[in-house]
Length: 530
Image (cartoon, rainbow, N blue to C red; front, top):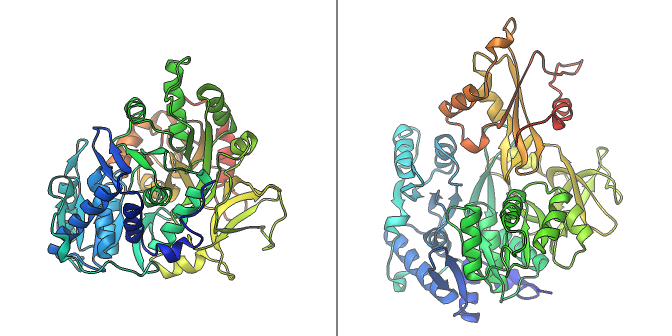
């Protein structure tokens, strides 16, 4: 079984850049990154290219503490730029390429960005133009007028001899990830190199990765899973195939070309691979594949069983969140029953307790809130009040998720305290959609809920109460809702797939609060065309 790089990995790799240096020295010729076009970077080449990029950034004025927001899809240049910034000690704010004006503008303003990295025009959308417009529209409120660089065409380059010493403090906050909360404004999650390395180490140990493995990065590197997974690669010494724009057929072709031994991402990815396998059931989809892995959304046991039966590999499913990249993870040495019905054991270095409604620590098999403590837990939010609310009096982070630990110490998740929908691994705040829909003239009131969905983990369903006196013939249609939310600049992936219009929403008898649990119960079994 894979062990941490050494018995005390934090002391021996205090920063992510030091981890890059150590890996380049240990296995310089190992292929670290491979893309769909066949480009490859060895561990040594990655270090050298990242240093040249760091020198280029330094020549532009980027140094320790420079605030950088970046929204760039998966390419070598993305990861090189991120680690070049880590080499300089810049403060990074990665943003998923799915987000648009509202979220990107908020992040630029909230972080007071001094530099914004974009891909220019990519996949039919002009990110660079959006950023320039956001900066112009907010010029009066921005403390700094950020510089904008298209790193797909203008990745900086310079002489590494000019670089200052690399940072050595792994406990300094140099990463800010925004995550949706129960309100419409996202929360800034503050991480250090230390929190990210220990999360990556927990993942590496759980998945028992070896130097002869070939992994895959089909999810956005800008996600918290990016440094988590890449850190695991550096710790365990294996490379991965980088997918720029994921399609099942394209990914499968790339994985076969390069002999991928592990693929995955989330439940939606497992489903897509399974669908590809069913096109040719008698031929292994990816002959080199040893396992699928992922997290971010619930996995029905039947999905595990179908993949095991039809693809002949295990799914090692796990549980993490932006605030704590790795909490629990299934591994190849677990039984099929454990892998199908749990999200694995708490990862190495993490403490976990289950706390009941009365504040006591639950016994085995008793549900309660999952609370965690350990070196991979974030350093708090950018908002102090949100930080205080997120931790209990004993310093345990309150995940807001409900579950229980079995006697075998495997975790079963059964629900959530927070009003968050997880669709294909991405957090969606119900209130943000409700706030946008409430202003529509055909909406009297609205509740947005997540419903179980085999492909997405959860699908977003808007339940609209028609205005008083309105006739059903004038009800809001799905097409009208989608168009309206697009006009409100809501990110497309947050737009509900399902719309239900009712005469009255269910409410309690005291304060008239909408009973979302009742909506979920009533709609969970209603036929819906997936």
